[in-house]
Each structure stands twice: as C-alpha cells, then as structure tokens.
Image (cartoon, rainbow, N blue to C red; front, side, top):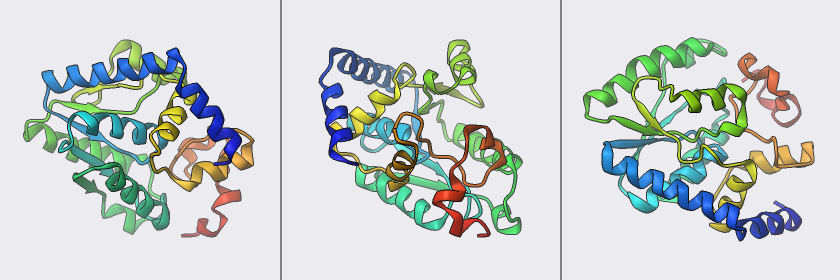
Length: 226
C-alpha cells in the first residue's frame, strides 16, 4: 500500500464516525459471546480479517473456521497466505475444511460448497453446541446482503454481523491502524483499479462472480488452467 492511501486510512481512523462504528462492533461481539457459543467464519478477505481481530481481542481461544475452495478456485500461494495471516492475527484454534470434490473436478460449481460446507460442516458444528457464527457481512457490499441483514436471514444457525454498518473505508482504516496482515491481492487490485473502494477477494475464474467485473485474467493469468 502506498503512503498516500495509508495516510488517508489513518486519518479516517481518527474520525468520530469510525470510532463509533468500532465501538458498536465491539459491543455487538460482546453481546453475542454472552448469549451464544460462537465461532468465527474466516475467509481471509479484508472484512473477515478485521472481524477476526476484533473477536480475538475479546475471546482469544475462539474456534476459527475456514473453508478451502481448492486449487482450482484458490491458488495455493493465496491459500497459504490466508492461513498464515489468520495465525499472525492470533487465531489459536483454527479449523480448516475442504472437499475431495475439488480434486475430482477442474472448477466445481457452488453446489460443492453448499453440499459439503452448509450441508455437512455447519450441522456438525451445531451438534458440538455452537449456536452462532461471526460473519464479516456488510450491508454496503450489495442490495442482497443489505436485505439479508435487514431481515436477519441465517443459513443454518444464528449469525452475528459486527461489521454490518461498516463501509470500505472503515475496514481499511481498521486494518491499517492495527497493522493487520492482509493479502497482497488487494494492493495489486487497487493499483489496477485505481482505488481500494471496490477491491474484493473472490474465488478465481468463478462464473458466480463474473458480474463483479473480474480482473483474474490480468492478475492471475498463470493460474487460468490450474
């Protein structure tokens, strides 16, 4: 990240608006931890990075669950960085799940995630007594997510969204202010797009995210036929 962007985010981190949102997130986390047995859903993206740090501050030994989409959707160097970042942030109890189906197909569709993670991993967590998941969902990201937050729509169990009212500025301000590790993918995308506003982490070469204007062919062309 260049110094101009870093200074911009640090300046925003000092505003009352950002401080209020951070305090609100911390209070939501505190309430969820008091009411439920929680775990953290960690993708490795910028939102879950900030959320993971916030939760670990209050519950250092909390279970952190990560889904590995396999080499066809997530190059191994990125996946390795995602895991290294989680540990650097302080995750002590990290549980990584994946599916053998990712080895059988070149680029399996969303059904694998739905069947294996939503259909297998989440029910298993419920059976172990977990009743709530911290998810880095933000209303700003899309109308669909905004409506999901408004309606309190959950998948298998209750979810807590500490960053629901955060903007992209809040996320980056928190990451920079707390010197959190994040994927170099974001700096590369920001340089290509000219801003950190719309940079996102998605599974690569995934038709599901084609509407976001994928830049995979520019940044990750060498993984096109992985």
